[in-house]
Image (tube, rainbow over the protein chains, first blue to last red):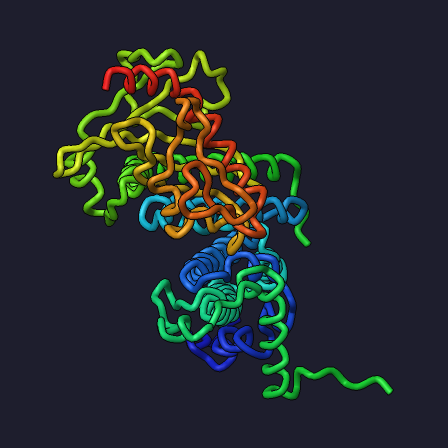
Length: 217
Length: 236
């Protein structure tokens, strides 16, 4: 049986990459991975590093699991997935400690907690185990990017209002402080991340009507 | 669905574990020297910061070598201990020992003006995890020259404020001994401390437990150095 080779960037494949950014965003639509979205988004820099780490871990773990998908015995598949994810996360942690020490200090335990990020295992279970490596890779990158996008937005908002800085640089001008402007301490605390995510969901649903559930009468 | 035998499952897991272990250990060993260096540089930066010297990652090593002229370890009676490297003393391990068995590191600094400062590493408990830092004293072994505190996981905006310069600068000029020469440390108090109070600084509102942690840390750790300070003050 001959099979036509699908082009690498066919519309079906691109959809894997694009959908998680909006229509099936892991955080705002599937409501997965909220815990880390609250914890590390106080500042923009750790948010970006976290997003990149998750992109790496998800991309690679999806490919690895997809390559092994015919070899993995179903009875121990969860353990295998966890092992793959955990090893990759430890790699990320080691590299951060060696090359980005400041950031790794800020993220501290949360890098390790990527292992428990529900999005990653969810995508391995739902997609990589039954699809070829290339679509799995795109699916992983796409979902991680969808997750990262929200992290970066939340991190940006929280750092701006909570500390008056962006990426550590002062953006709220000094005269504003002398005129009585005060940074909003609530933005530094986790509840405000939840509120920010809520507002993002609101805006997203306003713009993207098909996300709105049918009204039950 | 294909049926897998137990032998296959065991073999699969065994191979997987060995491969993963090999990869991780190789990476960890390759990166270890670099990670260790990062930690050391960070420690140097923190020691320098307690002397109110800002140092970037690259300038930390040369600046440390220029300003820190000597470092040594003493015991609780104020005698020098030979053969212990002050820089590599791990305070987390020292503070669980009884004071008699502790290694007490001192870093001696000298600025261009020729006067000396003495940096004492401190470590204690905050609300969520350890807090630590460095306290620099002037050469009367009494007046605080500068401080630098850091923490692992204190609440951002509240307890974590101990890591800000505003909090740390309050300590400058405070004294550890009262007029009778008794060790009273510097209290971190809840009520407003008047700026000219010799032995008190403002705590952090909303960060009471962390503030108390700093207070206790200073008393506990510096307290053990007191015999040494007394000896030195007598000689002066």
